[in-house]
Image (tube, rainbow, N blue to C red; front, side, top):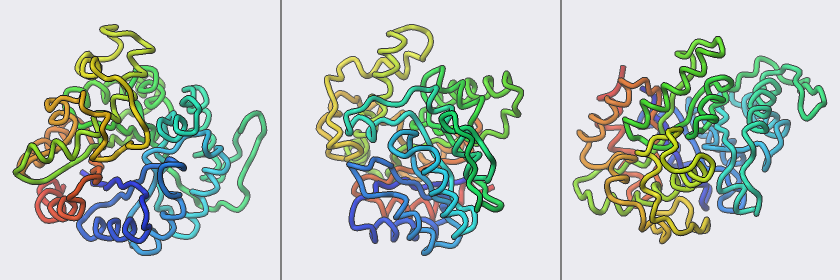
Length: 333
């Protein structure tokens, strides 16, 4: 199993770079950041610095979207980083939640996202492709490689992931829901004539190592609120108890009243009081190292290839170090 760390691009940029270096030293192979232009600093500027100051770390957004950056701009940016540092990037992409809504626009349609996945990968790897009705190719790309991983929850998005994407990003670590969603992705891949095992499965969630479970829950409760934004979209689209999405995912947002993106991804987010302890425990990895190892082994058995750890709490360094010292070695091989 591979491991990644997910950070917010908060200033100072040097702190983000140092945490990424710390993660690589502790055995993490991937370094991810959020990508919301208004809420955080520009991640692709940071990626260049991170790649310069690490040796093997693969970097990318969790996740970008096809509107705040057009496909040709996204592809060219990734291709430039790969040309400079040797194909050490991955493109995480989705419809756009905070990046679009903060700017007053709705998330992208799945149709636009699907077109972007193909266009970004083709352009970044040097192939000619259709971008908005125009055939484009980046002429200077040589031996480029860009895996494109899609974030998804709902049935149509999961099916698109299986048909088009190189990887699947699931932002929660509940084994039941993970198994359900991996199956949906792999079934769609098989129906499209693809090898389902070629799709990389990445589970991303907060992790907090320690014995004070109550404190860990409060530091990670924000995550249930973030996921709740996507769940609310699904309920609005498919209705409650539709059978299209498991009730285990949708039931907890019944008391959700609103969400202010000014607090997005923050441990002190005041809009997440509706998230019960049971959801925090299910969606996140909390407790002593042994509890993390047990849950990660269950996820690995379900087909998870990477666990990406959200380090957005008051114990970033300690959690990264604990993973390097005890947890990653236990999951090695």
